[in-house]
Image 1 (cartoon, rainbow, N blue to C red):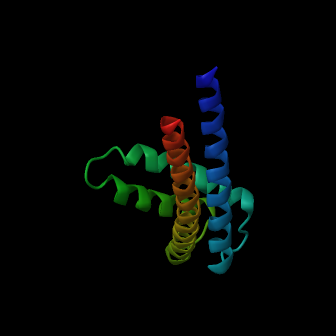
Image 2: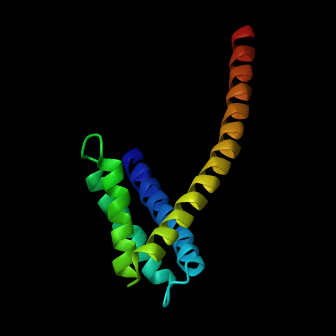
Length: 129
């Protein structure tokens, strides 16, 4: 039963991750003024970009760089645009992801720290009684 819960949670996390990434990419495509930019194309590019990043990430030392290059190539061809606009769309999506990720890490980090303190206090109280 636990494995099923973890699998379902992982799938839900992946879908949410892709939807958020696609949203940022779609906004980036709009800012870059890519004609015909739709959320569907952004989702497809985000999905293909994640797959390419996972595969190329296995290459030692330069896998991360190959993943970025592949993602920009995917954006270029999915949106049928030029290199400059593809790079701008990727940069906007990347920076937005970093900012939101940082904010979420801070929020959840503080929350987890607070829960950790409460848990430690409750554990000490249990040991003292």
